[in-house]
Length: 379
Ligand code: GDP
Ligand code: MN
Image 1 (cartoon, helix red, strand yellow):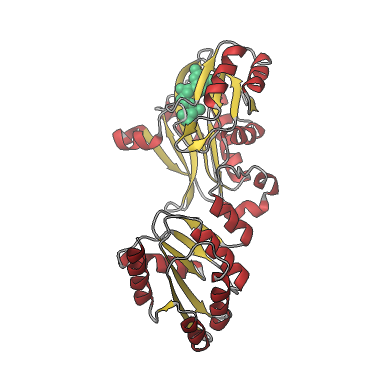
Image 2: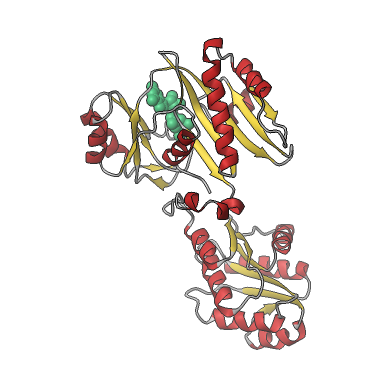
């Protein structure tokens, strides 16, 4: 789950990272009122869960509260990478002397929380990585003992932080690390981390991405979810207890089990198609859950066919078949459906599917090929 900048800053501030948090506004009048309480100049910033807001015109400096109101008026309602801005952050502006990139990620390949940093802050790190990768330091931390003093020194040296700022830098990196661990994050990023004209360190932008699988441990962070920006289908799936990730293809997939779902997607690709989603319906696919899965899949207008691949273990094949037939009658939109049910009670499932005129398949290769063909015929 991605957190908005102002939420990420709230968290980093709690962990002692120096920054000017600011206050959010949803109207120009509110922005103006906030700006009046802040020593100027102020910065007005679009709160959307995408990078590059600055370049898109979503970050503006204002000398007066009236100017802050005008900027808020221009930014609110603006579309940045397809997302409409509903909230702006109004914060004291900094005079920037230099900008750094500083982040912690969970690097699964290194099996360690890893520092990624560069003295070329402000710009997107992907850009620096492709133009001059030597400008980036990537440093895995020890998985058991975590961030050590020598790690902090190494990063400070790499960035060329002057000796009089070392203590403050230590506070930034220590705070970032504690926030990362404390929130079960996948990513905690400050870009830019600025040195101001008066020689202070401050986090001007922050981004925290939380590990969804650990969210159950953080009910307070769950409340920070921005439903405006979550894919509508992903919200619906989460509420139905279905594991779902939207993709760009045309073949909707409904599968039980995460491994089988990934295999199904691989075979769709092998058959020349593109999966429209990852969907693991979990155990016991009763009609209401199958119906919810259908609605979520069909909410995507790109979906031209659905491939249902169920392995009956504890879940009985005939029960799933009945669930599919029943759920299908509730749908607003119809596309060809290819069903493969194997395992427990597969023999009992077959006549139910045949009677409902569903396309069936015995092997997964065959099912994928039929789904790809059906999607093409429908396109
Ligand atoms: P992003 O473009 O979405 O990453 O948004 P940022 O918050 O990083 O802002 C983009 C750029 O705006 C930064 O790299 C800074 O150069 C500039 N910026 C942001 N806040 C301030 C500020 O307080 N003062 C000044 N002078 N520039 C700022
Ligand atoms: Mn930024």
